[in-house]
Length: 269
Image (cartoon, rainbow, N blue to C red; front, top):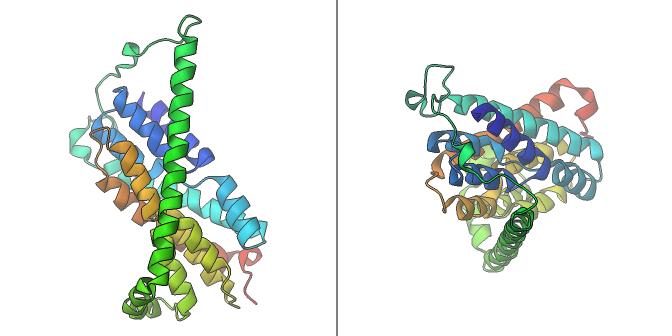
């Protein structure tokens, strides 16, 4: 049952994008379909950015190159699966012997079956839940766009950029506009990606790698979206934060490998 639930959460998280994976995992816990530890493991790698955003928005709309979008999506998924494998060992001492999976039985039988008599109730709850999620996502995007604008106009982001400049230079990021885009992306993903994509650079692979890093991490805005969803359950947000940091780092590494090993992805001038 855990494998089936995990596969569903992973697939829907990949197809639908942020924060659907977290919403599904939270529903699993609310319905007692998975244990707390299982849900924490799932949450760490099933909440991902979708192909419509990565290929359509980032690749085509921002970089004007669908190949970049495809590369970022491939490395995003590979990094997600890698994080899932790593988190296979999360709190493994609390699981059964059968390859680290629990020995409990699901309480799925306690859920209501959908029939013609309660179809209206089920549809009503589904629509209400979907609308609520849309409002949460939209609200956080607007809120953090305002916060980001305030931080930029008050020169707080510039000050943070100056503080972390030695760290960026250590990784070969000498362009202040790129480093500013990374800091903006850590706060709010879309604005950071847009800023990085507009930086003119002959070594465009650096822009792409930084975008892979931000797409994997997701930003504080998405982190709080997830927290608002999981706060109704007993799921800890800690493994999610660790998982997304790993996701960003691994995605950036995979992107670097692809650009270095496959000439088709090397778009440097």
